[in-house]
Amino acid sequence: MGEPQRTSLLDAPEHVLSTLQKDGSRRWLRPRLSHGHFLTARRIAAYLLIVIFTAIPYTSINGKPTILLDVVHRQFTLFGKTFLPTDTVLLALGMVGFIITIFLFTAVLGRVWCGWACPQTVYMEFVFRPIERLCHGTAGRGGAANRPVPKWRMALKHVLYFLISIYLAHTFLAYFVGVENLRHWILGSPFEHPVAFVVMTVTTLLMLFDFGYFREQMCILACPYGRFQSVMLDRQSLIISYDPQRGEPRGKFEKHVASGARRFGDCVDCHQCVTTCPTGIDIRQGLQLECIGCAQCIDACDAVMVKLGRSPGLIRYSSQDAIDGKPRRRFRPRLVFYPTLLVIIAALLAVVVSHRQPADITLMRNPGLPFVLNPDGRVANNLRVKITNRQSSPASFSVSIIDDPQAQLTMSSNPVMVKPGESLTVGLVITLPREVFVAEKHPLKLRVTDGDAVNRQLDYQMMGPSNGANHE
Image (cartoon, rainbow, N blue to C red; front, side, top):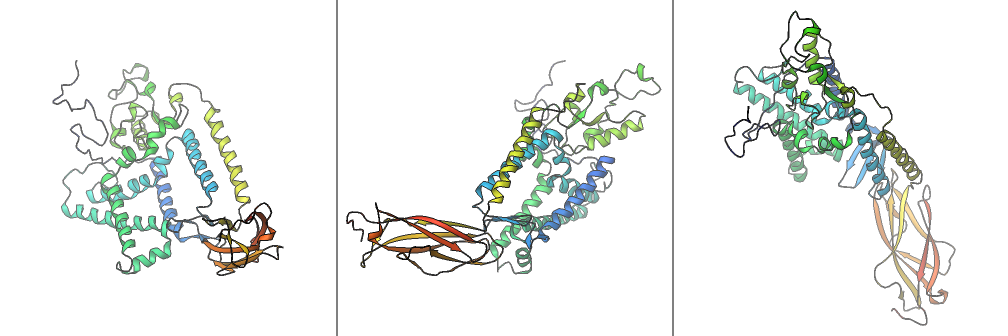
């Protein structure tokens, strides 16, 4: 038999994407619900995660939010610790450690995150699809409705989608603006905070677009994690696998035939694993980037196998090598390399954290002339001091010169009050008699202290004239 005749040069021989028809139109997926122990476990995990995700913005540690990513004020609070943009090394190490942890997690457990804990999967499969099934009259079984859905049911579905999207948008924003600001936004008039109202509206519409229209395409088309799995997985990684040695050749169930006399394998080609897949793939075609590891095909296949009196596990969590009958290797290069890197990063993080100061203090020279010769003959250097208060309470920082009675310090205000997490830069002028300069320089020491936890000594080289130079 030859290839199927195409009606157009643009016709694809098969589905390019599981969410597209051959003519390029959208293929709406309404997966059948397969009950089983994996679905039960995922439900428990999903609803627990939803509770945790909702509760975290309302919890605090040491008087600080558990998680607050305040992008506007450039403060990031994680588990009671506040990090500032000046924590470049900490943030860089944390980001690298996070990425390597993803690599390690994926190398061992495959895409378990996608199927069990990813917010996209959790809310899509355990909030929005159940609402859709309820409104379409397919609650508890899923799949396409047997008859046209009444308009009032469709309207109810969209209303519920909208309300859930509002809740999700507000919960999501609470991680970035805090619950107090969010409460103010909700209770106040939109005219009092138009920008915030626009942010809330856009976020709500994006949630509605994602879960109401884009749906599983977020995993297939937009999420980079699935695209990278080919480089993060190896043949020993845990994946959902179909066992072709046991399942092939596929064929109808043969009643009253001894196992040794059967013409077909265990797969009866019932397509239950296909119709239950939330991304619309056939797991029997092997590992695919669309597979999110949700295990619905396992529950579907196990139910069929039990019904036919055969052992479950035709589709199961396994690895490519295990399916091919190769031995399991406990020690793999990436399982040594990734943990080693994580240990090194953890050690570096510990060192950096242990050397963190309650305040960052930087002394800088003002741009322009290095010094000015005043009319009274004294040499002036114009400087700036930048103070970042990392403490949880306001602090009053004073600047003084150490053991140099000839030096005079002038500031517009001294001491300087700095709020928690705030960075403040103030100008200062130091003058000295020109006679003290040797080779155009004079060493100086300054102290910046809040009278409590902060007591920093700063070394500075005063610049001055030489051989009668005049910068007046």
